[in-house]
Length: 109
Image 1: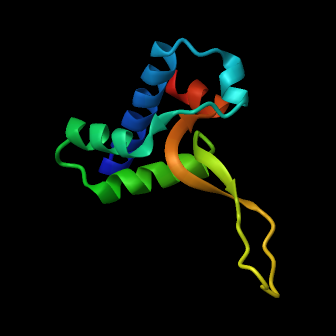
Image 2: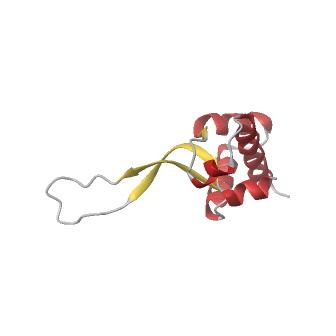
């Protein structure tokens, strides 16, 4: 296994541990609960394996999001500039925290 795959597994384990320690239920997975602060998770994961880099963490998180195993939040409405002729309607993640999805919970178990 490579560094990114190892980091992905470690991220899932950390999120599962947090989920279980907080004694959250299945409903939290459906309601996009407030997860672990991203900066704390990153620091913890990089300390766990001092041979991994910030890039390894970022790529692992990107792959986990792509696979819908984790997500980030909170979501915020895009703020269009005043008097803009082009209007964007949508949401984006502020990427302040990371949380497990139901699929991610199953994978971590």
